[in-house]
Image (tube, rainbow over all chains, first blue to last red; front, side, top):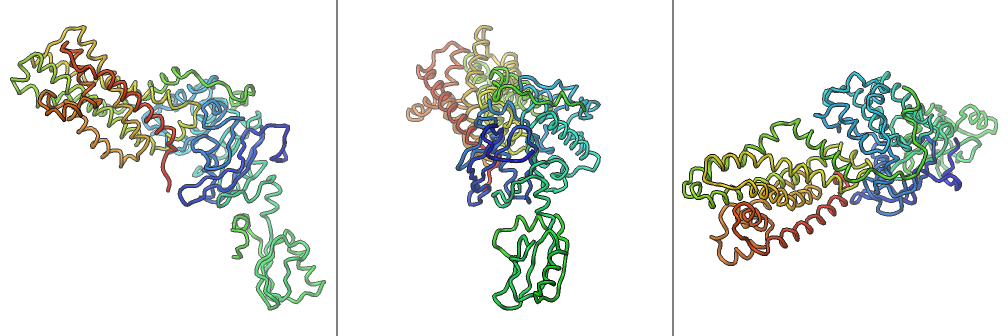
Length: 307
Length: 267
């Protein structure tokens, strides 16, 4: 699905319009606009403290924005009526330890007009055997699965997943990914945060990169991956090479003096060939593949700051 | 895992939430269940007023020996037990709950402030009545306190009603402050209110100015109504208006505090 935040004919299920939220002096979200259409699976990517969780808490109606508007399924998320179509995962550490698994699911399901029957849901997530266990006695992976069960019990139209698989082993992670894909395959809308590129890569069709309270990129998964899978060409030259063909971004050019420049390009071979054939003077050439993490870190670095 | 179960329902964009009464009942059941799972909390509620009765009322023959004075003493202690349980359970309990990660999750469910507040009031009232049972038993068997069945029922009803302003006050504190700040605030509120309300010393012993202040407190209003229900002795005419006034004021405060609350505070 091609992301287009301004599709007028399909009303967005999640809509943030110029939203600002501060915590004291810290600006957690700075004039953020984002629209998620029905059936989209959007990955919110960003380092810790980027504002991802604040964004989700606004959509879940837990906080109100200082400026701008947040809409969930066309209504104010702080109005309980808007939240009948919302599914949220609790943090795994936050389950009431003395309640049994089935009791927690019954309690949460009791808030919705047409909940999934508890035994059915527990069986689906492989928790059927543990129905009578107190949640305090579950393992980390079991708690995660229960958290996802609690998000799904109300048959939500929008699912918010905050770091759904952090700290899980490979098998458990894969099983949860399958559950999320299945929900999305049936037409559900998913907004998930992660600081793992891998997770977003495995699930999302559209990626929104958030850093320091602002949206740095909002594109299809492929486009964002292309953007982050850049090569880094480092060399010393007098001429400013930022404008060479294929250079996406450049740093460190001097003013007519030899300077160590860093050039980012999707195709390092073509760039070097171009430099050689056009006779540009350079020395100490280094080419490094920017790792995904590295390229991602570059992408979320403050604009204009060369580092 | 099969698809249909997790399939989202397509129709209306904003399905109506469940009726508030049903949600309140749901929250009530789970709050009681959670409380009962930690039996020491229930036992503490049962033991404290009973012990106070043993130490402060039963040994004093001039109190325990006079039916009206003894009944009044039971009423004062019962009310103190209810005030203290309500303020601590809600002032401290709510503040502590808000620091648990499950609280923001519950707030994301399609349920508003009213059902949750109602459920908390209901749980408070249920455990308050439970806590008063041993007190009534001691009063009946070990003192001259006496009461007819009709008056006992009226007394329990009054007690439940009297717990409402303190549950609301507790919630206003609990939703406004962190657990660390809530504890001293609750203590600072409880003892002056209990003393000024005549729960420890009968208000007949108060100087005129203190009696005037006392008349305006919710504890005094609740005490007068309770004594009136149990002994039939007429109380102040101001008791009803003062109590309902406090209930209205504190209900507004509690709802405002709940709405303003956004979970843990960040600065």
